[in-house]
Each structure stands twice: as structure tokens, then as C-alpha cells.
Amino acid sequence: MCHQQVLKPVSEGGDVRYRETDDVFKTLVSELTSTIVPTTIMGLTILAVGLFAYESLGSIALMLATIGGSVASLAKIVVTVAHRRANATKRATVEDAARWEMAHGLLTFVIAASVGSLAAVVFTYRDLSVQILAAALIFGYSAGVAVRVSVRPFIAATAILIAGLPTTLSVMLYGDAAHWILAAMCVAFLVAAMQSVWHVYRTVTRQICLGLEMEHQARHDPLTGLPNRKALSEAFMTLGRADDTLTCVHCFDLDGFKYVNDRFGHAVGDDLLTSIADRLRETLDHPNIAIRVGGDEFVILQPDVRHPLEADSLARKIVDVLTAPYRIAGEDITIGISLGYTMALSGSANLEQMMVSADKASYRAKRNGGGIDRETPPALDLRPSSVAA
Image 1 (cartoon, one colour):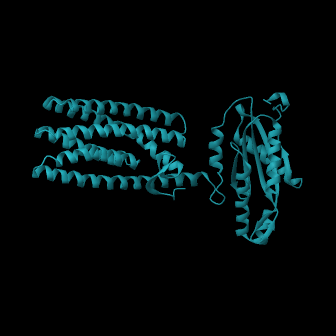
Image 2: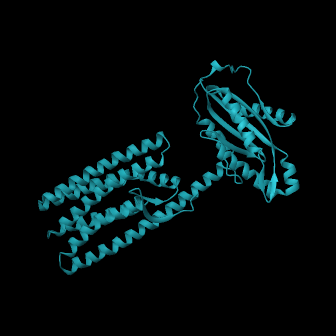
Image 3: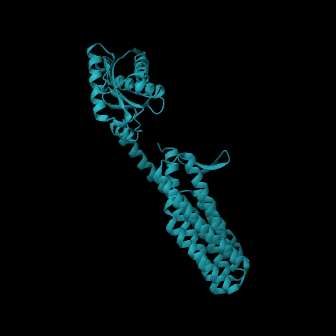
């Protein structure tokens, strides 16, 4: 899942992105919502240093930089709060994450520009007390960005350069030995900050990848890659509960699978299960889900059924697709399917009860030599007018 990690930004359709998996990208962008406290502290610091500098030096440029940084900090807090609420109410798409990343990035750049402008202007004056505050501001800002925004390294690196380079040039132009030393320190800290950005990014990305990989393994069958019973339960819990639609559960197992294992070996049996999973993925359309519950037993969750014939049609399609011959290890292998299915109104559907009913129908199908059977709850009216056409 997380093996593709290229730490160099690339351009895709004009947008700067990193070669990360979608899940990693969305998780990294969501980490930007943890910056409310440091953004608040930085906004107040910009306001305090800026007002002191304006009071001491009287430069209108200092006041403009102070206002710009304070307003941008407030705007970033508002965006961060909105981002948090959006994450809490729905699962973010890649497009959502890209928009949030852009909003965070633009406001971060504005704050960085205000910090850099404020410090650069201060160092054109010979007021040592204000220079000390400006130096502390620029170093504190760069350190904070390197730690908290490094999950998006392009944003962090650009912000540090926007803030640090004007200040460094202004210090260099001052001319005396002490300021040359300070300028050299600025350059050294800029280089160190860049290294810290990439180090933090790599570390956080590895941790996120590990967490996502463990989460994936907890919800997927290791052999076929299909979702497992836990994922089935979670998917069922997210289904709509409208009473004008049906939810259908198909349970099936393979007829003759033991014979395949005995004749060709377990490796071929595993290849057969993998091939079946591949065909299911190719056959099923969203929101239908295929699950391997163990051994040669599989489940299909078919939500949002508008007419009972849709369930019967899918059952026949599954049997037709899966009983076609497989070419494995130089052998043509054909397998039978015993499939049972049941359905219930979505508003009252119970997964465990439906699994029991579908299993019962599957056993009947197997006793009858394979194929398809249906178990319909007695209280369910399956006349065409009973559900939405």
C-alpha cells in the first residue's frame, strides 16, 4: 500500500503533489488540522513584535506586515477549524484534501511573507532591541514550521524560504562583523530547517504507512486481498436504511474445491481462490462488495436493490462468471458454485440473520447439485409494487 514514496514534488496538471498513495496523502493533509495552537501563538507573537517595532521605528511597512500576518493567522485558524469539522462529518476525497492543502498553503505563505517582511524591515534600522525581537521571531517561526507543517514539505520549505531569505539579505547588508555572523547563522539554520522538514516528513510518512498497512491487514483476507468479515460488518453498518429499497446478501462456496486441492496441490488451490477474487472484483460494480469469510466461502453484499430481480440477476451473473474454466499451472480447472441469497428491507435488515438465511439457501443449492437458491423471509412482500421500481 505504501511502497511508493518519492520525496520530490512533482507537477500534475499544474498542481504540486507528492507521489504518495491517496490514503497517505489524505492522512498527511489531515495532520494540518493540529496547528491551531501554534498558529494562534504565532499570530499573537507577530502582533506583539510588530506593534512594538512600529511604536519604536514608526515605519508604515511594519504596520502593514503586522496587519497582514495577524489577519492571515486568524484566517488560518478559521480554515483549520472548518477542516476539522469537515473531517468529522464525512470521509475526505483526494479532491477535498487537495483543496484543504491549497488553503493551508496559501495562508501559510502569507504569514511567512509577513514575518519575513517585518524582520527584513527591522534590520534596516539600528535599533538593537527591536532587532533581537525580529531575530527571535524569524527563528521561532522557522522552527515551528519545520516541526508542525513538515507533513506537507513543499509548503514548509517554501514558507521557511519566504520568511528567511529576505531577513538574511537584510542582515547581510548591515555590514558589520556581528551581523555577518548573524547572517551566516541564518543561512546555517535555513539549511538545518530544510533537513528537519524532510526528516519529519519521512518519519511521519513511514508511521502513517505502517498504520494504514496494519489497518488494511485487519480488514482484508491476506490471500485474496478481498475484505474480510470485519470489513463486511463495517460496510453493512454504513448502508442506508430506507424502507423503499432492499439489501441482499449472497453466500456461496465452491463445489469440488477439495478435489482440486487433492489433485493439484494447495498452491493451485490458492491460485484458484485468488483467480476467483480477481473475477469478483472485475464483475461487481459499486456499491456491491465481495468478501471472503474463510476457506472457499464467500459473501456478496448487494445494497440499494430496487427490485428483487436485480438480486436474482446478480446471483446468476456470479455463477456464470465463476464457473467458466480457469487456466492455472498449465491446467484447465472448472469449479462449481452453490449460491444462496436472501434479502430484506434496508430499514430493518440484520446482517447476522441474513447470513444465516443465505447460508441455509446455499446448503439447499449444494444438496441439489449446485446452482442458486433463495431464502425469502415470510414477512417480506416481493411483489413488484412493494419496492421502488
